[in-house]
Image: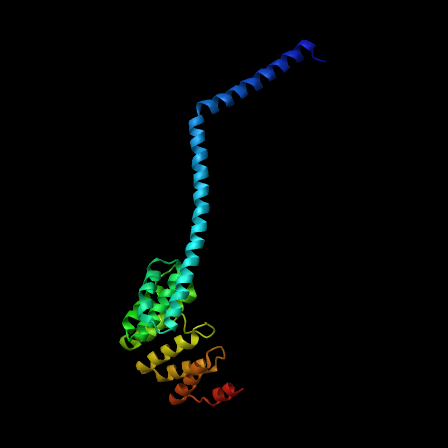
Amino acid sequence: MALPPSTDVNETFLREVDEEYRRDKVRDFFVENRAWLISAVVLFLAAAGGWIWWQNYQREKTGEQVEELAAVFQEIGKGNSKQAEPRLKALEANANDAVRTTAIFTGAALDLQNNNPKAAAAKYRSIAEDESQPEPYRQIALIRQTALEFDQLKPEDVIARMQPLAVPGEPWFGSAGEMTALALVKQGKKAEAGKLFAAIGRDLRVPEVIRGRAVQMASSLGIDASDLLDQRAQ
């Protein structure tokens, strides 16, 4: 049965009153909280603007640091290492990760040039122990640190340090394996060392210079290296 017209009118009126009430509530909310809402919008805009500024600033700062590093390299290339060192130390202390790491590696090379292996080893250690650094950087830093400290370390310490890297197929197998094998020789484990040298000489991914030394060492330790020499000649 259809509703009487008066009922339809009442429902329409009630809906209009309800909508008007809700509009009033919304208007009252904005009026009552106007200061808070304006502050919130201002804070949001400030935060967004600050984030955009920070991104641009970081890009500009990185560009300036890269330019400064390039200038340092030019000074070093000209033989002006003394003049370059303070600028390099500033980059080591304040630059972003990539530039800072490059500056530390460069500083270590200058320390070696200045006959200061202890300072160079300390720089390499700082990279090797920094878990925020990419793994390849930490690995090569550990290898260079260990090479500089090799004569002062116990053979077992060298072997422990190099254990994760002295594995065929690892990118630093040649260098890490060579130091491990030399540490084994120090321990009197010549047969084990000879086998490791032979494995290094057999690995075509190892640099030729290291493979050549490994073949010679394997032969000196009683490992027949004739097949390795033939492989190198191919």
